[in-house]
Image 1 (cartoon, rainbow, N blue to C red):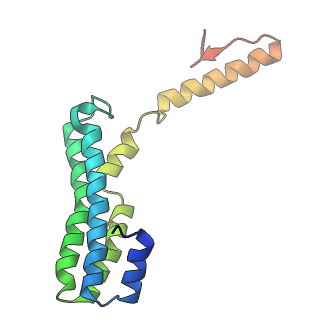
Image 2: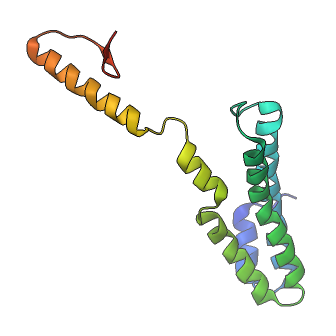
Image 3: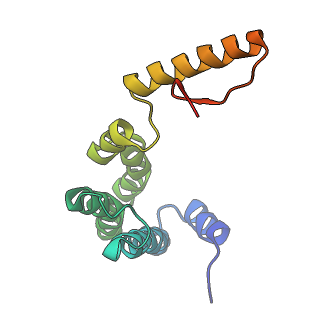
Length: 149
């Protein structure tokens, strides 16, 4: 019998101090986290769905970040048999860890494809000004980065 997400959340809300409910909830979260990890592994293995020039350290760091949650959830399950409240606190803290930017997020923010550099911004502004002046003059010439094409 497959449990839906709503049933698992209902189980946890009704039996929030019951160790088995906390363990089932944690098991569900582990399965979700490992599925994400499997997707990342598949996408990056042999550069199937990522840029072949991506640095291996970046791939490894992202893999570590995706595995972080399942390990914390495993710890929370073990902790649930000692103190249920602490386990629930761990479950609540994991999303916060993903909200806060990590090293991988900072890397993607600084090096994401298509992010304009100062040079491309300057060229785009030049091209825009050139196109505007051409429209005033009555000619329609297509420009790319300030050059005629």
